[in-house]
Image (cartoon, rainbow, N blue to C red; front, top):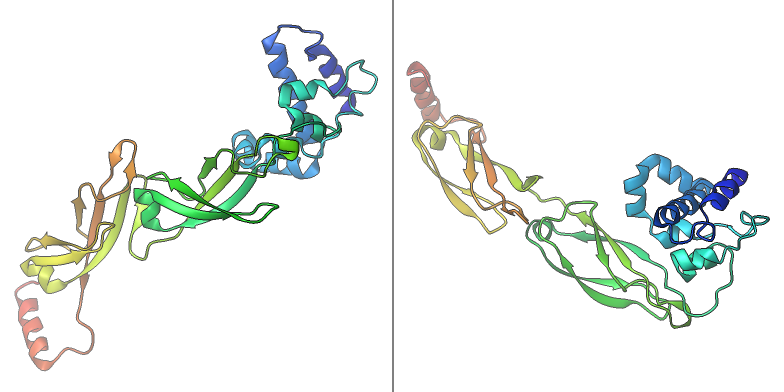
Length: 274
C-alpha cells in the first residue's frame, strides 16, 4: 500500500502540479485515504459506517492523528511539510513532523441527553465541557426538530490550541429521552388514549396529553375503537413549520367483575346488537 501511495503522491503532488486545484483536491483525498487505511481501527470504522457517516463521527484531527507520512514520503524527493500547507499544522504534526508554533486544538465529542419536548420544540441546554485546566460550563442552543443521534457543532469550544493556537470544535451527539405517551414520526407525533366504551358509543370528551399540556377533544357518538383524530399544529417544530398530533382512541372496559345491574344492562345491549 505504501508503494502505491508514494507513486500516486508523486503524480498528484502540488509541487508537480502548480495551480492545479483538481490535483490538489485529489492529493488531499489520497492522504486522507492513506491515514484511514494504514490504521486498522479507522479502517474498520470506515467499512462499518461508510464515507458520509465516518466523516460525521471523525474530524480531520481524528483522521490524521497518529498517521506516519514521513516514511511514506522517503525517497520521493518531497517532504511531509506539504501537509502543513494543505491541512494546517495539525496535519503536519499528526503526520510525524514537529509541533512548532501555534497549533489548532483537538476537537471534542460528547453525548448530551435531552428531553423529548426539547427535541421537538427546541430550547437551550447547559453542558459541562472537560478542559485540561478544569471543566467549563457552556450554554448551547437545541434546534427545534433535532433527532436522536444528530450532531450539533459548537465551533471553538473544543480543546485549547497548543502554543496559543485556535481552539478545536465541540461535536455534541444528541440523545433524545423517550416520552411516556408520545412517539415521533418525522414532524408528526402519535399517541393512544384509552376511552370508556360508553363514551365511544354515546359521545363525550376525553383528555389528551400533548407537548403543550393536556387538551380535551370531542368524541363523536358511535366512534369505533381504534379511530384516529388529527390535532393540527401540536407536533414537532421544523423549518417547514409544526407538524400534527395523531390521537388513536382505544376502547376501555371498567376494571373488576361487573355488578348484577351492569350484567343486566350489558345483556340488553347485546340483544340490541351492541
